[in-house]
Image (cartoon, rainbow, N blue to C red):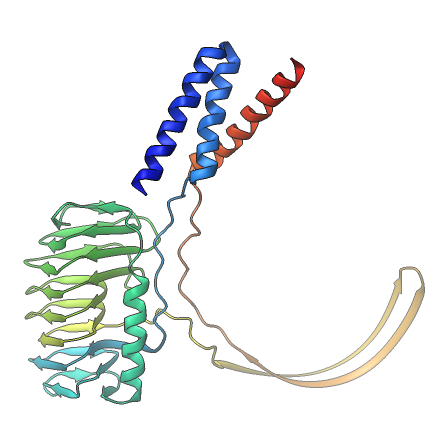
Amino acid sequence: MRKIGMYIAALIAIVTDTVSKNMKGRTQYLSLLAIVGAVALVCGVSPTLAATAPTLGDVDKFAILGASNVANSGPTVVNGDLGVYAGSAVTGFPPGIVNGLTHAADGDAQLAQAANTAAFTTLDQGCSVTYAGTKDLSGENLVAGVYCADAFRLTGTLTLSGSGVWIFKSASDLITSGTANVVGGDPCSVWWRVVSSATLGTSTQLTGNILALTSISLQTGATLNGRALVQTGAVTMDANTVTAPLCENPTPTATATETATATATATETATATATATETATSTATATETATATETATPPPTPIPEFPTVALPIISVIGLMYMFYRGKGK
C-alpha cells in the first residue's frame, strides 16, 4: 500500500510539473484542479460516517449478562433480565432484586451471548477521534462519533452534545472513579466497547451500554443507566442500580378497543367522464383495535463532506475544459 502511495505521488508530481511548464493562466489553474479531482476519483475521498448503534436482538432485554458467573452483595436492583452463559452461577439474589427474569445457562442466555458477541463486533467501527495512550474523558464536551484510545478513564463529568450515536472504543480497560457521570445522550445511543475489563467506581453514574470482553465490576453504589454485558468472565455488583432501556423496536400490541354502531343514508353524485348517481343505505357495526407504540429516533443519516462532492465535479469541469481547448487548437 505504501508503494502504491509513492507511485501516485510521483505521478502527480510529474503531471503537475508538465502542466506548470506548458500551460499558463486560467488553463494552468483548471488543469491543476482537474489533476486533484482525478486523484480524488481514482483514490476515493471517503465521507466521514456517523457512528452506528448495533442491533441487540436477543440481548436487548438483558440488563446484566455474565459468562462465567454473576455475583452480587448488598441491595442491588436490576431493572431488566439477568443472565449467565456458558457458566451457570448466579449469587447474591437475594438480597439483590431482579425486576425481570433470571436466566442461568438456559436457551435465552445462550442466544443473548451470541447477540452480545455480534454487537461487540459491530461496535468495532472506524475512529472519528483517536487519543494517544490513556484518555480521561472528564471535562470533555463531545458530539456523536467513534472515540478510540488505549484505555479510558472518567473521574468527573463527560458531556455529550447533540444527537446521534457515541461509541467509546478502549483497547484495554475502562475505569471510573469519584463522582464520574455522563450528561447528555441516552442509554440507547451511548456504547462502551472494552477489550479487557470495565470498573465503575464507588458512586459513579454512567450512561450507556458496556460491552466488555473479560469482566465488569460495579463497586459500591455505582449506577448504570444501560447494560453490563460480558463475553468471557464475570459481572460483579455491590449495592448497585442497573436499568436496561428498551432499544429495539417492540412488536405493536393492542392498547385500546373502540366499538361503534352507525346507520347512514347517503346520496352521492359524481361527475368525471361520466355521471353516476348512487343511493345507498347501510347499517354497520365495527370493532376497531388501535395501537400506538413510541420508538426511539434512529441516528441521522451521514452526509458526505464538501470535498467528497466538490473535487469530482471540479475534475470533470477541468477535464472538459482541457479537452475542448485542445480540440479547438
